[in-house]
Image (cartoon, rainbow, N blue to C red; front, side):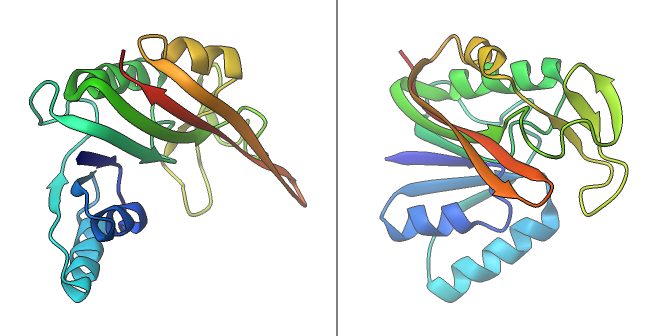
Length: 176
């Protein structure tokens, strides 16, 4: 089974999937994160394809992947960028391909932080994510963004903390 870890970062999910026997491709825009992941893969004697690339135009052929995993990545963009990325994800997934996506909820305590770029989208202006765009999804919008997929499960996770909630949606989906 061919799995794309979209926005793999330092590779927590990439390593797990490779150890489980999947044929994994990890894609990320950060050369630093991919270097760290390669070191982890070398130490674990795992073979994975790593690709440094943006997610707006995925460098893969149509219908290639059996599954796509993307955790805390998709919300890093404007509405138009997210729609474009989802079109690319749909294109590279085979029919009946599966997806697991974790993305921000509008109920997250960081909603409204930074400079507003468009409704529900902010460029963080301080902290460790300074300069990074965050889109916060209300559930109805999230469902519409994934309209070309069959959403097989959608849960909103609200983790209480001092400032409010860490709030994320967890989606399981299938390309019909």
